[in-house]
Image (tube, rainbow, N blue to C red; front, side):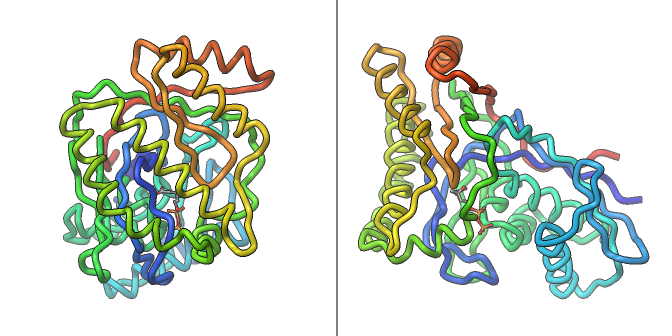
Length: 319
Ligand code: DP6
């Protein structure tokens, strides 16, 4: 009897934004993330007469289902197993979060696959498996802070835990300004960004940025962590603006939110932003300031939903 696998989403503080191998999802840079307690996916596989995929109880067809079926075929080839499978997933990632769910979705799918076929895989192997579904999923195998080392091949491109139960006071506020699906997927956006004249600089800075972020985590330096995360996110988004042709994930409200974070900081409310492949803003702050920041955002924006998250755990299984 297969168990349900649960994986939490993660937010990258040092971002993955570029592949050197699209099929294997090998990245051009290492990345570092915080796993979040508030958002997770649960997935269960059962033997069936044909492949099917249901998400939140609704049968999926089209590109979302194809991506899951192609992934399952890839994993079946990798492990020499076969059979049709029914995939049942529940996403506990409210649209209000404005957080992409592919990190938790593919981490849970990889773990459910390993459990279903009773594969003898450790977490490192599980991370490699999740990576092939969606790069960011490689990091959702672990709780706390995780690093995805870029490696040079399938064998050494996996995530490992940096600190699994951090003592640091760090919160993430997921601010939903816009609930429209993103127009340019991460996969497409990161490929297009390679045409930016600053792309090589982005790659050249990766080692140092990662080392600095690891140092901020080890010393519990929130100011350093927040400033570095904000800078790294801005670098990533500058690649989209300077791509040929240029594009942006930002909407007018994204800029308004960036400015509000700056204003709050000037007033002594320490907070920093990070932004993924969409218009929504995530704010890094410490417990004492969460309320104040939420109040300020609710005053500044007419329709805004904010969810507070702390550190989440790694993969787990439920009977
Ligand atoms: C901006 O992991 O969604 O969130 O490997 O193409 O599925 P694919 O990309 P995905 O990209 C995540 C991009 C990001 C940064 C990050 O999570 O590191």
